[in-house]
Length: 249
Image (cartoon, rainbow, N blue to C red):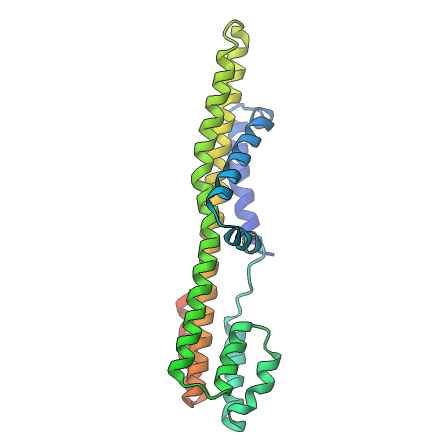
Protein backbone atom coordinates (compact mmCIF):
# COMPACT_ATOMS: atom_id res chain seq x y z
CA UNK A 1 0.00 0.00 0.00
CA UNK A 2 1.43 3.37 -1.04
CA UNK A 3 1.04 5.63 2.01
CA UNK A 4 2.14 8.72 0.08
CA UNK A 5 -0.85 8.44 -2.26
CA UNK A 6 -3.21 8.19 0.71
CA UNK A 7 -1.59 11.22 2.33
CA UNK A 8 -1.99 13.19 -0.88
CA UNK A 9 -5.70 12.41 -1.16
CA UNK A 10 -6.30 13.20 2.50
CA UNK A 11 -4.42 16.51 2.37
CA UNK A 12 -6.34 17.62 -0.71
CA UNK A 13 -9.79 16.90 0.70
CA UNK A 14 -8.97 18.13 4.22
CA UNK A 15 -7.71 21.40 2.72
CA UNK A 16 -10.91 21.93 0.72
CA UNK A 17 -13.31 20.94 3.49
CA UNK A 18 -11.24 22.71 6.17
CA UNK A 19 -11.11 25.91 4.13
CA UNK A 20 -14.87 25.79 3.71
CA UNK A 21 -15.28 25.35 7.47
CA UNK A 22 -12.94 28.26 8.25
CA UNK A 23 -14.99 30.51 5.99
CA UNK A 24 -18.07 29.68 8.04
CA UNK A 25 -19.48 27.10 5.66
CA UNK A 26 -21.13 23.89 6.76
CA UNK A 27 -20.15 20.43 5.52
CA UNK A 28 -23.80 19.64 4.98
CA UNK A 29 -23.93 22.42 2.39
CA UNK A 30 -21.50 20.41 0.25
CA UNK A 31 -23.54 17.22 0.44
CA UNK A 32 -26.01 16.88 -2.39
CA UNK A 33 -26.88 13.44 -3.73
CA UNK A 34 -28.62 14.61 -6.92
CA UNK A 35 -25.55 16.65 -7.86
CA UNK A 36 -23.29 13.69 -7.09
CA UNK A 37 -25.39 11.39 -9.26
CA UNK A 38 -25.42 13.89 -12.14
CA UNK A 39 -21.64 14.44 -12.10
CA UNK A 40 -20.50 10.87 -11.50
CA UNK A 41 -23.15 9.28 -13.68
CA UNK A 42 -22.67 11.74 -16.53
CA UNK A 43 -18.88 11.46 -16.41
CA UNK A 44 -18.84 7.68 -16.32
CA UNK A 45 -21.47 7.49 -19.03
CA UNK A 46 -19.53 9.79 -21.36
CA UNK A 47 -16.30 7.84 -20.85
CA UNK A 48 -18.02 4.49 -21.39
CA UNK A 49 -19.48 5.85 -24.62
CA UNK A 50 -16.12 6.96 -26.01
CA UNK A 51 -13.91 4.11 -24.76
CA UNK A 52 -13.62 0.59 -26.23
CA UNK A 53 -14.52 -2.23 -23.84
CA UNK A 54 -11.00 -3.69 -23.78
CA UNK A 55 -9.52 -0.33 -22.76
CA UNK A 56 -12.11 0.08 -20.02
CA UNK A 57 -11.19 -3.34 -18.67
CA UNK A 58 -7.50 -2.37 -18.71
CA UNK A 59 -8.31 0.87 -16.86
CA UNK A 60 -10.17 -1.04 -14.15
CA UNK A 61 -7.22 -3.41 -13.77
CA UNK A 62 -4.50 -0.77 -13.42
CA UNK A 63 -6.37 1.73 -11.25
CA UNK A 64 -5.33 -0.34 -8.21
CA UNK A 65 -1.76 0.84 -8.92
CA UNK A 66 -2.68 4.24 -7.47
CA UNK A 67 -2.64 2.86 -3.92
CA UNK A 68 -0.90 -0.45 -4.52
CA UNK A 69 1.72 0.17 -7.23
CA UNK A 70 4.01 -2.54 -8.59
CA UNK A 71 7.11 -2.80 -6.41
CA UNK A 72 10.23 -0.87 -7.37
CA UNK A 73 12.19 -3.99 -8.34
CA UNK A 74 15.17 -2.43 -10.10
CA UNK A 75 17.84 -3.49 -7.62
CA UNK A 76 16.38 -6.96 -7.16
CA UNK A 77 16.04 -7.24 -10.91
CA UNK A 78 19.68 -6.36 -11.47
CA UNK A 79 20.77 -9.04 -9.01
CA UNK A 80 18.54 -11.59 -10.73
CA UNK A 81 19.81 -10.68 -14.19
CA UNK A 82 23.42 -10.86 -13.03
CA UNK A 83 22.72 -14.38 -11.75
CA UNK A 84 21.50 -15.23 -15.25
CA UNK A 85 24.73 -13.89 -16.69
CA UNK A 86 26.85 -15.88 -14.25
CA UNK A 87 24.90 -19.06 -15.00
CA UNK A 88 25.24 -18.53 -18.76
CA UNK A 89 29.03 -18.08 -18.47
CA UNK A 90 29.44 -21.20 -16.35
CA UNK A 91 26.91 -23.57 -17.92
CA UNK A 92 26.13 -22.05 -21.30
CA UNK A 93 22.81 -20.66 -22.46
CA UNK A 94 21.08 -24.00 -21.90
CA UNK A 95 21.86 -23.61 -18.22
CA UNK A 96 19.22 -20.85 -18.11
CA UNK A 97 16.37 -23.31 -18.62
CA UNK A 98 15.72 -23.62 -14.89
CA UNK A 99 15.75 -19.84 -14.51
CA UNK A 100 13.23 -19.52 -17.35
CA UNK A 101 10.93 -22.07 -15.75
CA UNK A 102 11.05 -20.27 -12.40
CA UNK A 103 10.60 -16.78 -13.87
CA UNK A 104 7.15 -15.35 -13.05
CA UNK A 105 7.42 -12.30 -15.32
CA UNK A 106 6.16 -13.44 -18.73
CA UNK A 107 8.16 -10.72 -20.49
CA UNK A 108 11.46 -11.77 -18.94
CA UNK A 109 10.62 -15.44 -19.47
CA UNK A 110 10.05 -14.84 -23.17
CA UNK A 111 13.45 -13.14 -23.40
CA UNK A 112 15.13 -16.06 -21.67
CA UNK A 113 13.40 -18.54 -23.96
CA UNK A 114 14.55 -16.63 -27.04
CA UNK A 115 18.06 -16.61 -25.58
CA UNK A 116 18.04 -20.33 -24.85
CA UNK A 117 16.73 -21.08 -28.35
CA UNK A 118 19.80 -19.38 -29.78
CA UNK A 119 18.07 -16.31 -31.20
CA UNK A 120 20.26 -13.65 -32.74
CA UNK A 121 20.58 -10.46 -30.63
CA UNK A 122 18.90 -8.38 -33.36
CA UNK A 123 15.95 -10.77 -33.47
CA UNK A 124 15.62 -10.82 -29.68
CA UNK A 125 15.69 -7.02 -29.54
CA UNK A 126 13.09 -6.73 -32.29
CA UNK A 127 10.66 -9.19 -30.66
CA UNK A 128 11.00 -7.80 -27.14
CA UNK A 129 10.91 -4.14 -28.10
CA UNK A 130 7.76 -4.72 -30.13
CA UNK A 131 6.09 -6.36 -27.15
CA UNK A 132 7.30 -3.59 -24.84
CA UNK A 133 5.93 -0.91 -27.18
CA UNK A 134 2.54 -2.64 -27.44
CA UNK A 135 2.33 -3.11 -23.67
CA UNK A 136 3.27 0.50 -22.95
CA UNK A 137 0.77 1.89 -25.46
CA UNK A 138 -1.98 -0.29 -24.00
CA UNK A 139 -1.25 0.79 -20.42
CA UNK A 140 -0.97 4.48 -21.32
CA UNK A 141 -4.27 4.23 -23.17
CA UNK A 142 -5.82 2.75 -20.03
CA UNK A 143 -4.43 5.63 -17.95
CA UNK A 144 -5.88 8.12 -20.45
CA UNK A 145 -9.39 6.93 -19.51
CA UNK A 146 -9.02 8.82 -16.22
CA UNK A 147 -7.69 11.88 -18.02
CA UNK A 148 -10.84 11.81 -20.14
CA UNK A 149 -12.92 11.64 -16.97
CA UNK A 150 -11.04 14.69 -15.71
CA UNK A 151 -12.02 16.51 -18.88
CA UNK A 152 -15.70 15.60 -18.75
CA UNK A 153 -16.36 16.08 -15.02
CA UNK A 154 -16.19 19.93 -14.91
CA UNK A 155 -18.50 20.22 -17.92
CA UNK A 156 -20.98 17.75 -16.42
CA UNK A 157 -20.78 19.77 -13.21
CA UNK A 158 -21.79 22.91 -15.10
CA UNK A 159 -24.69 21.00 -16.65
CA UNK A 160 -25.77 20.00 -13.14
CA UNK A 161 -25.53 23.61 -11.96
CA UNK A 162 -27.65 24.83 -14.87
CA UNK A 163 -30.24 22.14 -14.14
CA UNK A 164 -30.32 23.30 -10.53
CA UNK A 165 -30.75 26.92 -11.58
CA UNK A 166 -33.63 25.92 -13.84
CA UNK A 167 -35.26 24.35 -10.81
CA UNK A 168 -34.60 27.50 -8.76
CA UNK A 169 -36.11 29.72 -11.43
CA UNK A 170 -39.30 27.76 -11.04
CA UNK A 171 -39.44 28.88 -7.40
CA UNK A 172 -39.23 32.63 -7.98
CA UNK A 173 -42.58 33.03 -6.32
CA UNK A 174 -40.92 32.08 -3.01
CA UNK A 175 -37.85 34.36 -2.58
CA UNK A 176 -36.93 32.68 0.71
CA UNK A 177 -35.83 29.58 -1.17
CA UNK A 178 -33.71 31.31 -3.78
CA UNK A 179 -30.49 31.62 -1.78
CA UNK A 180 -30.41 28.02 -0.65
CA UNK A 181 -31.50 26.81 -4.08
CA UNK A 182 -28.74 28.68 -5.90
CA UNK A 183 -26.12 27.46 -3.42
CA UNK A 184 -27.27 23.88 -3.94
CA UNK A 185 -27.17 24.31 -7.71
CA UNK A 186 -23.50 25.25 -7.66
CA UNK A 187 -22.55 22.20 -5.58
CA UNK A 188 -22.58 20.23 -8.85
CA UNK A 189 -19.89 22.56 -10.23
CA UNK A 190 -17.78 21.99 -7.12
CA UNK A 191 -18.14 18.24 -7.54
CA UNK A 192 -17.14 18.37 -11.20
CA UNK A 193 -14.11 20.59 -10.74
CA UNK A 194 -13.09 18.90 -7.48
CA UNK A 195 -13.26 15.36 -8.83
CA UNK A 196 -11.40 16.36 -11.99
CA UNK A 197 -8.51 18.12 -10.23
CA UNK A 198 -8.30 16.14 -7.01
CA UNK A 199 -9.02 12.63 -8.29
CA UNK A 200 -9.27 11.92 -12.01
CA UNK A 201 -6.35 13.97 -13.41
CA UNK A 202 -3.93 13.08 -10.57
CA UNK A 203 -4.84 9.41 -10.98
CA UNK A 204 -4.19 9.60 -14.73
CA UNK A 205 -0.78 11.24 -14.25
CA UNK A 206 0.22 8.83 -11.49
CA UNK A 207 -0.68 5.82 -13.60
CA UNK A 208 1.23 7.24 -16.57
CA UNK A 209 4.32 7.68 -14.37
CA UNK A 210 4.04 4.09 -13.12
CA UNK A 211 3.64 2.81 -16.69
CA UNK A 212 6.81 4.67 -17.70
CA UNK A 213 8.67 3.19 -14.71
CA UNK A 214 7.52 -0.28 -15.70
CA UNK A 215 8.65 0.33 -19.29
CA UNK A 216 12.07 1.43 -18.03
CA UNK A 217 12.39 -1.80 -16.05
CA UNK A 218 11.49 -3.85 -19.10
CA UNK A 219 13.98 -1.92 -21.21
CA UNK A 220 16.57 -2.86 -18.63
CA UNK A 221 15.51 -6.51 -18.99
CA UNK A 222 16.02 -6.30 -22.75
CA UNK A 223 19.51 -4.87 -22.32
CA UNK A 224 20.40 -7.64 -19.86
CA UNK A 225 19.18 -10.37 -22.22
CA UNK A 226 21.11 -8.88 -25.13
CA UNK A 227 24.27 -8.45 -23.07
CA UNK A 228 24.11 -12.12 -22.05
CA UNK A 229 23.54 -13.11 -25.68
CA UNK A 230 26.65 -11.16 -26.65
CA UNK A 231 28.70 -12.83 -23.90
CA UNK A 232 29.50 -9.71 -21.89
CA UNK A 233 31.15 -10.04 -18.49
CA UNK A 234 28.75 -9.79 -15.52
CA UNK A 235 30.58 -6.73 -14.21
CA UNK A 236 30.13 -4.96 -17.51
CA UNK A 237 26.46 -5.91 -17.54
CA UNK A 238 26.00 -4.56 -14.03
CA UNK A 239 27.47 -1.19 -15.02
CA UNK A 240 25.14 -1.06 -18.01
CA UNK A 241 22.07 -1.88 -15.95
CA UNK A 242 22.90 0.53 -13.13
CA UNK A 243 22.34 3.35 -15.62
CA UNK A 244 18.64 2.49 -15.67
CA UNK A 245 18.40 2.90 -11.90
CA UNK A 246 19.96 6.37 -12.16
CA UNK A 247 17.71 7.35 -15.09
CA UNK A 248 14.48 6.46 -13.32
CA UNK A 249 15.31 8.88 -10.51
